[in-house]
Length: 102
Image (cartoon, rainbow, N blue to C red; front, side, top):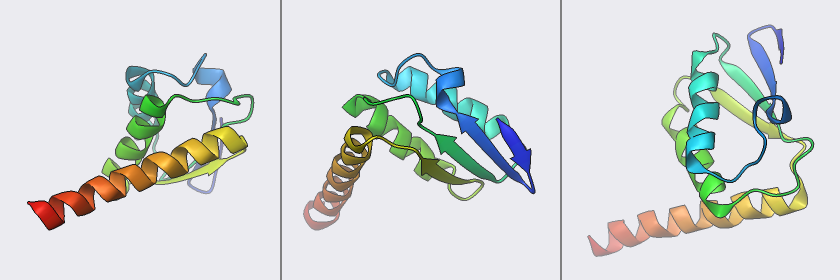
């Protein structure tokens, strides 16, 4: 992790073995929340895969702390970027369904 001008860079490879469990993602976000910096760069270098549940939990956690922290992702593999995109669309569709139907 590097810090400069209220920015921290987190190399996920230094903190996690794999991107597969929701609880692992929650641990990552507890760490992010503990950082004093407001801008966090999350570096996915070294990972080619993440589970759908990890991606979902990551996006939910990112949204929850968005008023306190700005999180930016870098070095995502195509697979991980695609997974995040698919999960984000599913979350948005689910929200629209709740608005329309309930």
